[in-house]
Structure formats: C-alpha cells, structure tokens
Length: 384
Image (tube, rainbow, N blue to C red; front, side, top):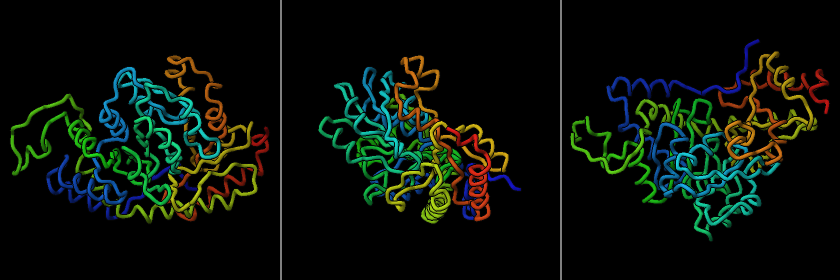
C-alpha cells in the first residue's frame, strides 16, 4: 500500500513553469510578481486592497497594528484555534480574551462574544474553522455599534463565501494563509485584504521595515537609492518566487475547491449512519473544505483510532489543541479544561481526515476503507 498523507500540495506544470520563469529572470525578492499576485487575489475575493506577506501570522500582526492596538486593550478570540491568533495580540501587550465555540460548527460562539465585550475590547478575531465561515452577521451586530474591529483569521478560508460574498470582502481586515498545507500554497506566505485605504497603507508600510516608498524598487532601473524610514516596521514581505507559485495556484483555485468538495461529499455519504458527527457545512458550495473534521463518539479512544488508521497507511491529524490546554496560556491565565468546556469536549474527539485536491480516487477509497474497517474491527475505539 502507498501511504496517504494528511495533506499534500497540488502542483501542476503551471507552478513549475511560473517559478522557473522567476528564477530565470534574476529578480527573486519582492517585485512585479508580488504586485500581480496582490491584484489578482484582491479581484478574486472582491477586496479593494491586498497586501502579500510571508505568513498569515504576519498579516494578523499588521492588522492589529493598523487598528492601533495598544497595551491594555483586549481582543476576543476563540479558544479553539492555533496559537498565532492569540500570540499576535500579546505582541502589543494587549490581552487575548478567549471565548468558547459553537459545538456544531466549531466556530466562535457569538453569544459568548457578547458576554466577553468590555470597554477595553478593541477587536474580535473570528476563525473560519476548516473553511466554514463564522456567523459574521451576528458578530457585526455586536461589533459595529461599539466601534470594535472585526479581523478575520481566514487561514482556512480561501475560497470560502458567506451569504454569497467571499471571505476577504466582508470584515474590516481579513488575513489568509498560503502555508504548504493550505488550499492554495506559496510554501510559506499570507495575504491581508481590506477595503480601508488607511489600513492598507499602514500595513504596506509596516510590512517592509517602515520604509516610506516602493522599497522593493531600490535595486531596479526605475528605483532610487534614497529612502526614509518613517516607522519601526517589520520584515514581512513576500518574494516573487512565492508569488509566482501563488499566481499559478490562484488560477486553479476554483477547480481545486470543487475537488475538495467532491471528497467531502464522498466522506459524508460513506460515514452517514455511523456513530460519528460529520462536519457542519451549511451550503457546501460556500465551504473551502480545507479540513474535514470527523468527530468520534464521546468517550472514544482517539489515539487508538488514529494509530489504527496509520497502520492502514492513512495519515490523520487533530485540529486544534485549544489554547487553554497549552502550558503557556494555562499557566499565565489560570485556565483549566473546564474553562472552555465546548472547546475541550470537541477537541477530545476530533480527527481531521485527508482532504486535498491532489487526492486520487484510489487515495479516497483507501481512506474510506480504512475508516470503515476501523469502525467494524476496533470495538474499543468506539467504546464510550
């Protein structure tokens, strides 16, 4: 048998040709390909501005800088997320305020958000888990009357839609990831999207050392050696190599999303009727299907389940270990597993199955066969 990994990038001849063209050009860092990628991505999601960066973490950091987050401010985030969502808040000496999630969608629970708002709340960061959009209407109803910014952590959410509009065109700022496992990849990379001219200008400035004007052109024929540093910025720029890869991926994004939806629908059909909770998906056409989170029966032994899949040459993962269970956040804020009981309970039974557009039908059949075999043969896995 051939091992089916949890994730694998979908690369075609287009990506190899695009990267080769950049290498042959002799211009490898931020340049024309980056700016082309920014324009194409902004058009794809319906945003006025897109700023290409070296990670989604960088995008989140710059987004909080753009809204002038300060020490003592608070930012509301889900407990059920990757550490980047919280750590960028700590960069400012501000406080990440964790709230619980909705058990069905695994997205931030607007009721908990409303309870957590204080006079110090500066922003809310919803995470569109797995590619399923959070309830942005409910969050806007909380945020807008109070002047609170909404910054989407859309690391999973390209190309996701919410009520027909693409994520990236709705909230104050949206931050995407192009990490190697994501729905489109630049190896490492991210994008910040906004319709706000002031936010966009600030993020662009701070993304490359706070240098005032077209720093990337300094070594080109049309550039100038002279520059001014107007703010203590960061080194967050994307390279033309990465952008060329991103442009090629972007042209194939709809087809890749459609393939992931096919895989999700095959999984749903295969596992319906078993003692699992299948992913929430609303209108499946609006879901990016970055992750397929299967949830085992309560009390099931997830470790045995994952090991049994691996013995059958199937990779799986878990998303996420909630923040309040990690030593840093647990010890700093005095959290216990009961601090966010829904996040804890859903994490303890979540298994992410392979779902990537490069999966063959044979790979898909192998995953389905392995899961169903484990269900039939490993009774102690499902003993609760």
